[in-house]
Length: 220
Image (cartoon, rainbow, N blue to C red):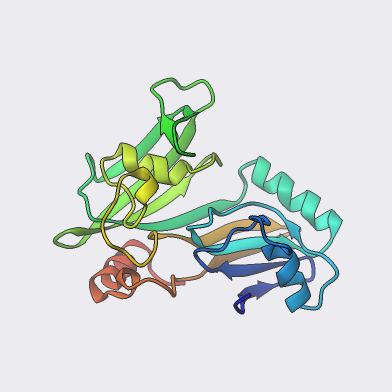
């Protein structure tokens, strides 16, 4: 397994930069990613608190003990951990910013679809910024935690994520351009604002994208 960067270390948890293309589940392998990482760090066990898709890179919290795992899981369940994602698309959206709200249902080939009903909806706030002709940066704030939520939300805007073949972008790309950029939360009286810019992906490194990101999310 490739070396994983630890972005923040606390006595109760670590926050890592998960590379794209790695599943947080066993995914048919003899030893899963979490077990391999625990072995890499010489730790007896790590607790997975939330998930990122295999194609998604970025910040992932892993608890170091059972009590912290329960407490952090409660924070996620209560939506008290704010998550910020970055995505790129080659397609102009139907609107530049707003809310995407709707129930999600399973579709074909392991995909999901957004419905007009709102019984138990996925909710995503988004802002988009032009980088250059044919390339647009999206800053996404999921307010729920549904499977493939952001990828489906982007498709519903008419702006599938660059490199996401499952949801309609068949352009040649070195990765699916979705990255978990920031986590903002309170834990046991301490405030955490953790940020991690994407490190892999040709288009994430383009100057026009970095300029748009600096405008959208000024550094700490």
